[in-house]
Length: 221
Image (cartoon, rainbow, N blue to C red; front, top):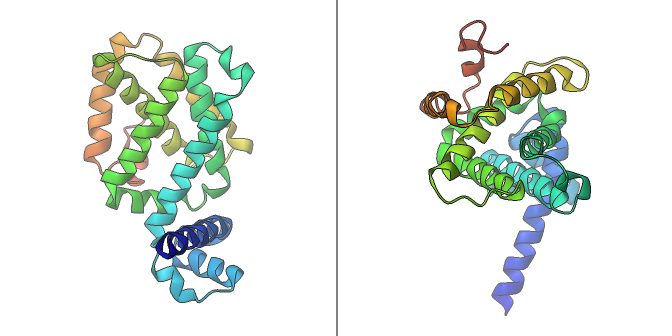
């Protein structure tokens, strides 16, 4: 009984620490400084920040934002009326909008995510899986995996574009997303392109920011 209470109390403090750290991450980034500032807010020893690593904060934020979007859209009556492609586009856009305030420091988070690629990719795959399920996909054949690879291809390429987008309210990013979606209308004909692109992304350590700058000119039009 006491062990359960202690564990519950620790989880409660940890979640508060994460949420406060996210506030400070806007200015300080996803690092120990943000965690230490959150400790000060909670009036606890900054030594507590050593128990939680910056990568833990990054993964917490990803899961938190993923869950918020899925939970919100599950009960959104307007969303239910969208076509499947529009559901997918809407989920990607709203998810990335939650990262908007952090984009000035998100390249740092991406670099850490690449160093912990297994867990980072698992979180992303879960979001792709949940998104397709919410969009109405119940397939269990090879298309099940192809659709999720397609989702991540669009999501990752849009996220990378967003890193250097300085337009108001990320207008150019959403225009980029629209173009990516229009290119994937014929899912079947795009399987080889998606597979090749995703292999390149994973082999590059996935979240390496330098990928964006190393794309050949014209590929991100």
